[in-house]
Length: 368
Figure (spheres, one colour):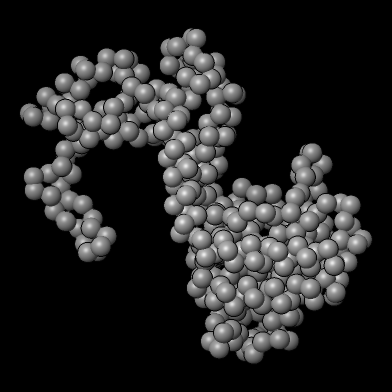
């Protein structure tokens, strides 16, 4: 009866909120998980919370953090709009909820927001406040999260910029720059944040998405350390989306690994990278391998596979998989890295999925 009275009092005290028809109920939390002790802790008496659930388009300004000393949980239910990243994108929370996504949604849907909230004169700033609770508080929350993340990643960021400087110097000595510099393809250090002792996904080099460029987009040299993981690449142009799906099917931990390239210079086709270009990249690539100390290497580059076999102690077996006029190869075994044997897999490039999907499937099944 006590909880019923609390719920009734809350609803009566928030008439404007209740006009928007949220789901409101009282929760009794009987246990919490203590991560330091790694066990569930029973709560006696139970902790009482008021829960307010609502769709994305909602006036969050109407939901207080507490009511009569009781905490109020504010929860958005349902899918977020298309202006936000997909649910599959593993991005830092402050990037997922960044101002730019809110602003794009408001600019594209202001009339809809006005109608849903029954506020015909709502301004863009007021709409941002309504969706976020307070855009100023929301921005501070995002900034604080990013500053904490920078502090946690500071060693990786320092190492990233060390490599970035070396790659920039190498790029201007490269054949790619001499022959194709006017195309402004530039270079990239890494697609994901650095995580040691996790699967390392190796591609050949950053690619050029023709349709993306034709749509008016431009490549730039990488300058910032990426805070997203491999799943964050699900939203990027290119073939990584295929790998995400394959990893979920055959090797789920691959989706939580680090992704780098054998060559750091971007091109539209692989054969524009010369032996000289690779020689410029070899020492930087090896330095990155030593730093990351991967738990397993999953390689998708024929030329990188040759480099591993020629320059490292390996015990690898290879299977030839014909498919019509095309053939792909899959390899599995061990490679000695940092004086330690780790699992090694070599698989067809994701682009093979378009032409010989059954053979690619056999390659994955052979490896995993």
